[in-house]
Length: 302
Image (cartoon, rainbow, N blue to C red; front, side):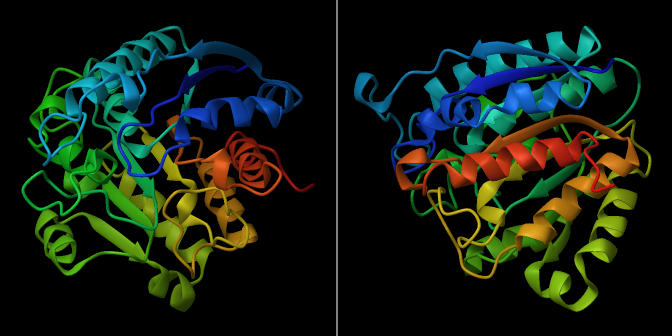
């Protein structure tokens, strides 16, 4: 019986809209633990990683707002995720804004590094999340975690797992991208990560894109982490996100991503992030995220 650990991360410091701190509760209301258990998995809800709210902290450096507090949360998540991996469980981080990925991905990278293997990363998102404090126009750290994982900024997030970079560009694949500003387009190109925009998904089909993405993320690695921002999905199927962008993954495309991840058998760990229940419609986005977790862990149509 495969073990799964649920790690709630009520992090609401990385963006500019309140509400993602309620994301983990919304997943629990959607019954994520019970549904995963029904697949025959051994599921343990490890509770929430302690996370402060903005009202209790000052934003600090305007180029990377709340970064010190975010780093503390990510460090706790990194330690908890690593403990789950060491225990033979697959950790699922329930967010919470996307800055938490600095902790969860660093843990998976550290786990494989100790076994002399590299980590692949599949980043499913409408956005690149690869800004640095010097390039960000908002200072919102949820737009920076991938930059930290691939490099050295923000410094507070870049070496949580004990090494920099946590992942290499050649092992990193972005899927579903459709909203980059001009400066971020330059950064993505310079980073030399692999990118499949919605245009490529429209032209090639999601199955072909995922075949290529998984091949890239598993080439020379010991497996891959999936960081799934629910705003990768079209707002018609995932309304409860802080930064919705039209033209995203359809319901079936969103599931094909996860079904093919399950078929690969190479996923080490998973994030489901940017769920904002204050913007949702009767918890529909939390239900979708729960269904996506089921697909990623092997629920089949037949």
